[in-house]
Length: 71
Image (cartoon, rainbow, N blue to C red; front, top):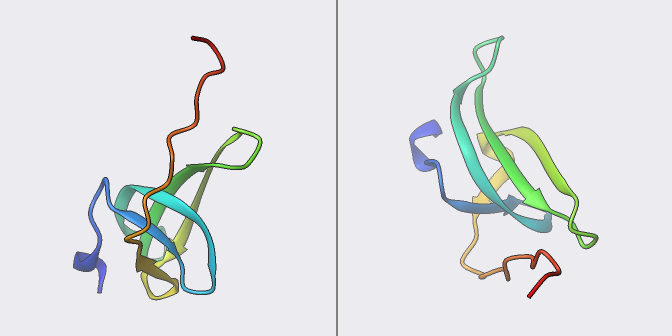
């Protein structure tokens, strides 16, 4: 299951939620297959988290890149 994801993939939780970018894949400290992700929320705050592979699915929906607010 862990080979299903790679860095740069866009994923989301199986239940829905924000589109996230995969930043790492591998076993966690207990040996469970884990995917580490990063995303920006609606207020442009950077977030990171990890999830078990079984709770994620690949996302085909493109998400706009947050602007820095300066042009």
